[in-house]
Length: 187
Image 1 (tube, rainbow, N blue to C red):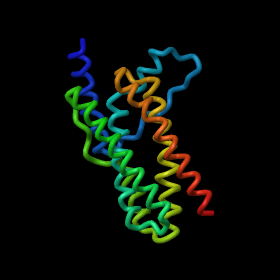
Image 2: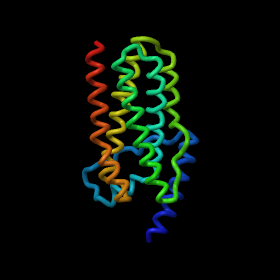
Image 3: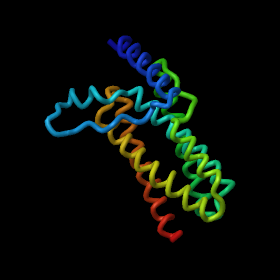
């Protein structure tokens, strides 16, 4: 049974990676709650797509935060960026170990839409960079991360993956709150 699940997860992961390479790796759309059973909700959520999205989003946030370490005008923004680098690197390493135990590998590319965000950040300077980085990476991306991880913590089929996603939520929420505080202070 476990071997069959690993084979199915591996095949789905490869399919997800192919979709990612084609630019189709957006996180799964939320499933309507009314009138659906647990089995129906779970059928729409695939562990490999979560893994692909979580890994790609984390990799993007690390790259954007490294950029912020050099481009941010504010020491507080640079401190926030360093915190994200530290936390998301640890999270990425944990996820890599979790999937390695299942015979899988993390994709090495960013989700397609993240390249445009990196380009936008790269074109900004000074205070404009700080505001854009906090708005995009700190607030917008962390809101999306929280939604993705909340869903995985409820619907992931693999119990270890489900538990891992749930354990990451407090950290993601603290990142969002810190970004909102920085955003308010920059106004």
